[in-house]
Amino acid sequence: MAVIELDGLTKQFGSLTAVQGLDLRIGNGEIFGFLGPNGAGKSTTINIVLDFVKPTSGSATVFGMDCQRQGTQLRQRIGVLPEGYDIYDRLTGRQHLEFAIESKNATNDPQQLLERVGIAEAADRKAGGYSKGMAQRLTLAMALVGDPELLILDEPTTGLDPNGARQIREIIREENRRGTTVFFSSHILGQVEAVCDRVGILREGQLVADDSIEGLRENVPGGESLVVEGSGFTDSVVASVRALAGVETVDEREPGSVLAISLNSSSSKTAVLSEIENAGATVSDFSTQEASLEDLFAAYTTGGARA
Amino acid sequence: MSWQAIAKKDFKDSLRSRTLWGIIGSFIFLIFLLAFLATDGDINDTEGFVSVIGGTFLFGVLLFVPLTGLFISIKSIVRERESGTINLLLSLPHSRRDMVIGKFLGRSAVMSISIVAGFLPACILILVEAQVTPLYELFAFLVATICLGLLFVGFGVGFSALVNSETQATVAGVLLFFLLYLWPFVFGALDIDLPDFLDRFYLLTLFFDMLAALLSVTENIGNASIVVRGENNFAEGAAATAPIHLQHWFAFVILGALIAVPLAVGYIRFDSADL
Image 1 (cartoon, chains in turn yellow, purple):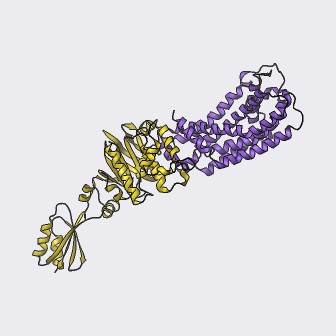
Image 2: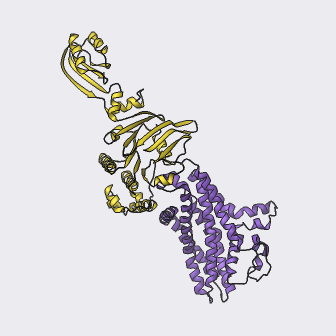
């Protein structure tokens, strides 16, 4: 059974369409990374699931329960790190957790949760004095109250240093091992790549990709490139390489001596290398390069790539 | 029952406001000063006691209660919306109705404590100075004042749910502060004579009727509202009976409606809003 199910979800704010006909299913036990540049509609989608925002049309369900009508019931079973939140300045970290525990009728120990997110020493300080990173950790601790079956984390690593981001990813993995489904959004592919089973990329309110990271690589031109060094790479050599099956683009990095050839999954590197030599050039060295995650992300969010 | 958690959290949070304690502190001083001036003379019977208490409380009722009541409530919801703390609150299994109810109850508790704190030193002074100790009368004054306080909290929380920004909330608070006391004068200036029943909605009338209803437990006071009886008959045993909607205790029903309607209107708007 799908844990989260979005059907034709659309949200318009006046004349602006933030989310357009979004269909998405997140299965039980998955770690799903919800990606997209800022303003793509990620938070609007999450806010509809949390019933902060009412959809214009379409439906959103969690555990088969309607997000608009059974919100309190379903929120009993999930943990949330929302976007654009603020903590209560005048309450201590411990009081925040006590509030979450009482709200969910849970039995967690506040101290233990604060230790888990690494801010135990600040438990009895007013949260108004917390740094952005500490506030983020406190909110994550609140999300873990009641051992939720689903974690919804909206940009969980913003405001954290690399070490903090790594700790968050560890907590996500730990929770997932316990059987928790995780849905988290980010505008940085690198943040989700390390933990996600599956990623969805949202662009201008529409889902342009829904696949594993490997799957995304295969579908993007320039998913892998072959860099060949040597001599005698004349125009006719370049033209014959371009004509080969599976070659997407050929970039002359150093005219005559270095070529970067982007290949799709159906190509053969050996065929490319022998073609270059048959055409009369000399190959002295070659290497393969995977497209950087940034290139991949850019291909989906600004270019025309779709999966 | 999740409003309990919200009320509790809210109570802890707002009692830590320094501004609130600043307001309470300055009123403790002013009310005490007033009580000090009012007790200048012998207070040797209940009637004299009640008039001293009345004089002292009137100032508090006209200024302290509306100011504090609106201060603690008018931004209670909209500030959470503007700052984003509402995202934490509504990520938990609370509905927006729980939030409105919890806010109203939490802030009502804060209001009650503020009133008790604000009047306590003055009450002690009066009790020390007086030769009589009509504790029930004192208690009746406090209860009627707290009830009026809850009315302001109801209006404040209701409007806080209704408006879209803290600026709008401030404007609403200032308007409510003046309108809730001044509206009968507007009708008076226009020479419009309102029916007795509508006159009962005036806050001072409401206050005196609640007080009369509470005092009638121990004293022989007729059951009619002050709008029928007139202020001068306050302590006299008027035998005249009035129709139910013009009896003094009906003030509590009116109070309930005046609290429930703004809360309900605010809630309906808030429930359908995008945060």
